[in-house]
Length: 190
Image 1 (spheres, rainbow, N blue to C red):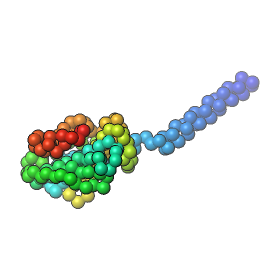
Image 2: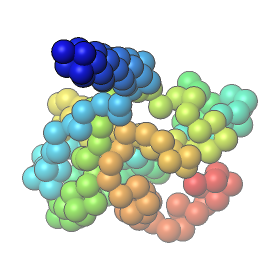
Image 3: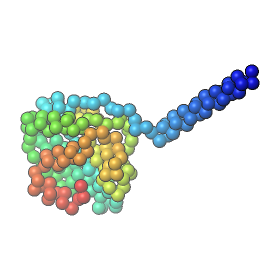
């Protein structure tokens, strides 16, 4: 009987220890976040002949308002636009617009689809403050009437974006003529 009693005590202790470990893991995950559930993947390629809008926002290092810069590239079925933004309040200091068409937009969206542009975590984490000495990138998509997703990443390898970051950024940059892109962003580290 003593062996059974000792075995029961050991089993009860192991079960109790397992429950404590599980509770600790769940608490840590709740406090620090587990990255959030994956957002449903959207087929952006099917929006070629719509009023959809794809946007990349590059938010530069955290610094004094006068020196802070953002670059916003917006691509639609009728035009591509690049805005150079000064400060944290959205003051556009330079902007260029280029005409486009649904066929070009369709090729762009299909490329984004293949680069997993709509892949990411549904976590609502605010990107501001992350990677303060580097850049933050915000990838968003609107179907013409409502925002379907917005993900972000940083040069410090943080964020909610699950697609091919470098290729997606290069694809957005390619929607602005090279000469204008260099002129507008030459003094901004991208």
